[in-house]
Image 1 (cartoon, rainbow, N blue to C red):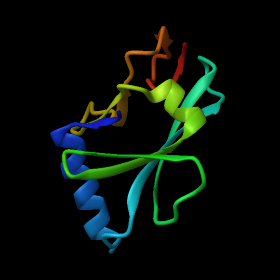
Image 2: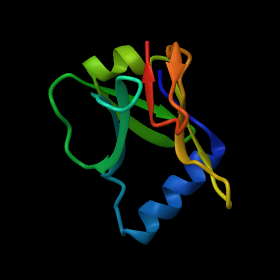
Image 3: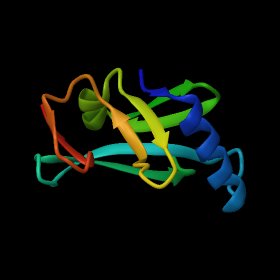
Length: 108
C-alpha cells in the first residue's frame, strides 16, 4: 500500500483543479536510479495505465506505481509540507536505510 496524507491530498486536489485535470487522472510515483543516495523519487500526473501497474487508493487519491518501484515504496506515505521552509511533496519511506539532505533520494 502507498498512503497519502491529508496535506498531500489537499495539495494534489489544488494542482489538479489548477491544471484542469479530470477524474481520469491519477498520481504516478516511481523510483529511478540517481541522486546522491542512489535512488530518486519521481511523481507526475498521468491518465494512462500500463501493464504491471500497481493501483492504490488512499484518502480519496488514486496512486499508481510500477511493480519494480512498489518494491521500494511499500508502506510509504506521500506527504506535503508548504510554507517558507517547506519541502513540497516528500515521501515518508520506512524502507529507506538513509536519505540525502534534500530528501529527494534514498538508499535501501
